[in-house]
Length: 348
Image 1: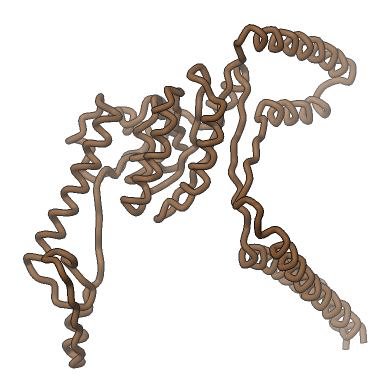
Image 2 (image 1 turned 180 degrees about the vertical axis):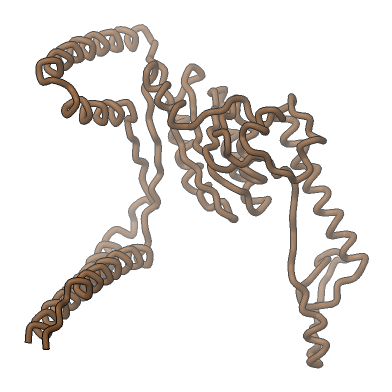
């Protein structure tokens, strides 16, 4: 009897969650219908100095004696008041405290994060001055040439505006990722981050022999001698392969030229073999300038500058909102089910 009661409670929770998902979907659909004319996204700005101060205060509130903490608060209020007065005076005189703008780039094969990156850079360039700095926390193992070419061009906008640019590599900046990184005035790499891979790769399967074995003809019609050099289904020719290799070599040469132009101190012939190096070895190759993490660099910057993290959030489509709501509901359902199974008791 107790088992049936437990099962009934579990079933009721399940139904409740399913109903909640339906309500969320309906609300999202209604909201989407009303807000179609809204912008595609919005900018969010975090003042990292305040975030660090808040974390420090949370620790002090537990670790320090109340009297000492009270005295520190008084001193901090005096310092904040003096700094505010000094800042107002500087602004009246046409000066301002250095600002550091932090961006994040998480790369995939298509460099889809460039859609947010371009909006973030556009926003920063409306305010940033040559005495400020932009820091990009970059993570990417590369991908499509044209996609990362665009991402690198977006990063180049910062340099073209004469604003100091620092790129931090905590995990990996290889191939297209390094194409972006090499633009920076300063590259900081974690000791075991992966750097390099200045090369080009292309590969595809060919099913011609399988089709031939099963008496399947594949016909392709092109206008232009090199409209299609190699294909997955037709028989690839020696001439087609040679032309394809010529195109890959040309892409590689352009990649090497790009790195050389942006980091002339690099011996490009020794590093453009497609190899990768850990941060410490990359420093020896002059692919990076310093060893360290983005956390250390940004924390240090907070001592002397106002540091802002700039994030562009794209407006989520109805399908994306549905997927998030469904996944969340499914996670809760699985956790509830697992908890019920773990705690259920059977009696004879």
